[in-house]
Length: 137
Image (cartoon, rainbow, N blue to C red):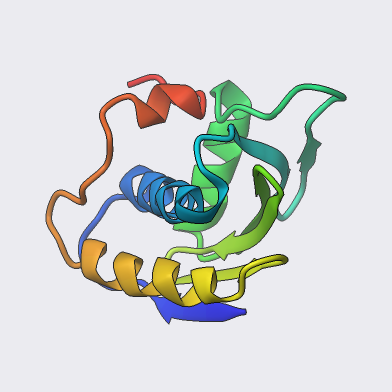
């Protein structure tokens, strides 16, 4: 597992989108164009799990709960899949951790990229990515 401190002035939603986007983007290097799926989200008071043959989206109450926990410094844990790779990620207002099951070097690549992106005023994120994970503007 690799971890980093989150510094800078990004709002909570941008932090969340940045870590999810770059986890997806770096994972695609080894897994190709397989779908990036959110399988499970654990907050302080809720556990959301994807139903069979579906995946979670960050919509409505789920997004509100996730953002509220992150803003309050509480870790939110994600289980993400991309092809045959599984990512276990944890984010709070000031930290991010990631572990991979198949390709351990991905952990370092993701953290290195995020350390650069988190310092930017406007992190580099594909415009279509928020809607792919269920976030509507």
